[in-house]
Image (cartoon, rainbow, N blue to C red; front, top):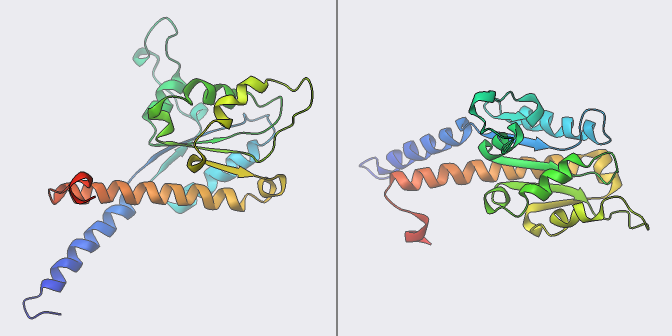
Length: 198
């Protein structure tokens, strides 16, 4: 350490930066099967895992959030889910290959090609889907199958059952987002931007 205490000043700044990472609150939404649908228990497990990692984050299913009706545009243009998804910082969508789980596929089809949604969303979907003749709603999978590979986790039946891979995946994505968000804020305070130092 230098005699003028420079090292201490750097350490203080970095400690504040670390503290800001630990205390940053995130809004995370998990789309997926409804309460009666297959795979709902895995959706619950993902939420429970993310909540256990951070007491500051708000991790929820859209159906748990009440949106005041007076803030929604009239004539059915926007649903409460639209507003919730738009307001979230991170969205995970758990897709299950089952004819009773089409709601989340409809949402991915609706939002999936929007840049704002793709920039904050991650899909968790099967490695292989049923390809049988007369398969249900094959067109609804198009947006999911076309999703950027760096924004998807593909699971096998065994991996879905254990949920270990999925829990690790969502935790890593949240941690990366939180760190990057704080990093950008830290660099802005210094007057630097990613453009200037990239």
